[in-house]
Image (cartoon, rainbow, N blue to C red; front, side, top):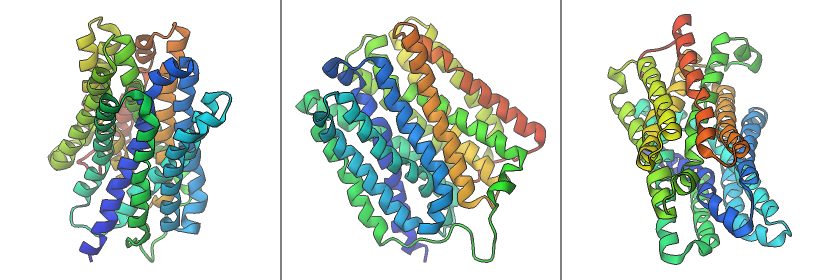
Length: 400
């Protein structure tokens, strides 16, 4: 029976790679959009805000329709939207007098698919029979990181060989992944998220628990702490540090993603022997230090090193918060998964959005924007302290 669900688990792994594509490919083109189409940084910031903003709206809406239409139909629809959005990115800009609106509409299409994937993949894996759910869930979240690494590395190689002018071709190639993975989910076995005979929490009951709101704040800060640097790493390395695009992409977002993936794999393997709260608190402190290094140290090498260290520090934040919530609220079901994704995506939108806004007000100075975003790991640290004060779950990792 467990072997039969390997196809399902592998398809979920690929699903996180797809989410990495839709979240991290376009940021590699920010400077290209700015130079080729004359789009100012303030408008480019809107692409990030709309992407994650729409994802969080989908997270909220999914509470009402995922259980009704079923997980399989929702998964197939998510893959279709991701593929359609990527293909549109290569087609729609040429159909608008203002290229920006074509790019924006494409981002909106794949953002809906990405939001659905965020809600669906974790509960599907959680429901699969397994003797090692902790390791499986940890590996699931790390695939987003490795997908991010793959997006940056393969895109950088493509641009170096074929030129950045051919970015539309690469966009269509990335669209093949959701199209292929859609067929895998079409025949993959799925189990119900809530076991038969059990009743999940209602929205009202969940909202009445104070610990739930602490987790929501922590999830918001986890997403913001991660994306405030991740979404701007390439642009920051190229423009703020004065390095080439190839060096910027490799030393910025790819190093960030690789370090984040390594940290998640490490905690997934050794987490049973460690106290989760202590590691999350230590990671938050390290994240604050990395933000200060990126924004205040004047040397380019130190700034690039700060981006990599930031990836290492944020690795545990998202899955760690999820772990604490799942352990404290075991009958949360689809509602809990959706609302936690909502909070995380709100953070993913507000983190880079705040950094971009402050940067624009400061004359496109990204260092000042990133310095402002240090607020998020500070708030996450406060959330961890609040959980410990309430006596909430703070032991070893249950499902990262």
